[in-house]
Length: 294
Image 1 (cartoon, helix red, strand yellow):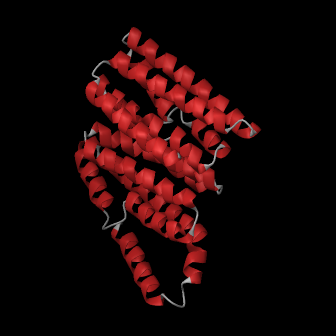
Image 2 (image 1 turned 90 degrees about the vertical axis):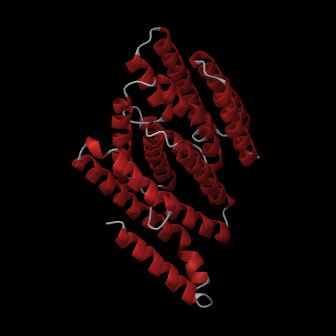
Image 3 (image 1 turned 135 degrees about the horizontal axis):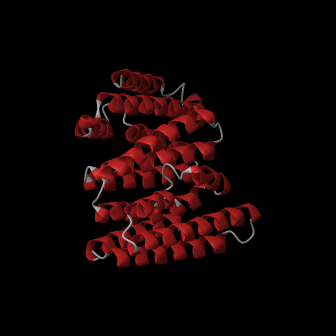
């Protein structure tokens, strides 16, 4: 049900974005979709006090950010508009609510709340068409903060929240560079990653491992070349900026390695005797990819 609803919202968002070039109408449709999502989540969270608290917090944040975006549009104030778009996205400097929200919901509910409801916000950045440097600054610090959080937390949902902040930062970078195909590919990969995550069986976890490797940018995955292309595009920002982005990316390699140890130890232990050759090939591929990333 969550998968079908998320896919429907994704297609509906794309249709609205394609046919609507009005900033106000885009904002109105986005708020309507947000209200429908909250109503749906309210129905599924009636018997859970912790989820109700998280849902009320999310609802409160969505109201504030929606009103802030409208005020920014009305007064034509870019900085107010940008601040509340970043609040709605959960990006730096208004990102602290993301970890708390992730700790209150399970993965299939977050699949809707923090995924499909944010697609249209990236197209708001395109409609602004002004001062992309500020959004790039926010995306850089989102990647930085998420890397620090990933080393700080050991709780799985908090790690997923950190990954959400990092993904938001990279999606902003992709969108600023106007790589719309890359943006859609990244969003679909997130959908399949979460789908295999909450199916919760060994084969699904194995598929999720390959999606994690693919999305993290390990060579020779396509996202390794995509990130290399992004680094070339932002080279004029300075060498040290690219250095720090690569450094933060390496931190996430370490985090993904920790997740692999958590989720796939039982899988490898179960198939060790029957599939030792394939396991050795996989380890060789993984270690080779890790060395190539430096």
